[in-house]
Length: 203
Ligand code: ZN
Image (cartoon, rainbow, N blue to C red; front, side, top):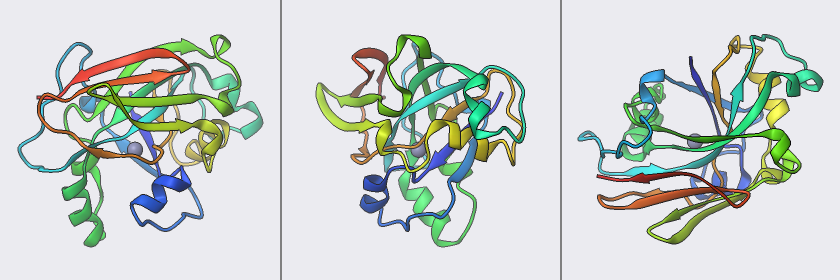
């Protein structure tokens, strides 16, 4: 399986990183080796001194599709989740400066936290899902999918023009404002529509 991630999908986060508002979604891939096995702690990798959390709504693809029409995109997923796109911000800044790919900063081992899954039928309108990230009991990120520049179905249509989507693939839909650094012993909890979706201890 692959993980397809969207960058710069929330205006407030674009502003905090002083990025330009993109004309099209920013897309990158994390390898399956980036998934943090559930129940394992996240270890800060030795190559970075600035690992950031990015809480994101996730979509699990349930069947093969390419060139998916936006109006049929809903047929390609039943499950919605929440996760973290851990990012080595210092390394990413260096790579960006040189115009190089981000993979090392985004796809390293353990960089993808994938929490539990909810059936979309259990949720209210997918375009107004509330989610948040708590760090050591304090809310550090809060988002709502209504603030996405590109909504879930638009993202599926867009991504599937370039990458065939397969059963089990996971889409990370981008992070809202409030990204920040983790340090050893931080405890992160992700909440989607009142459901606790994951918890991670940083080592
Ligand atoms: Zn992200």
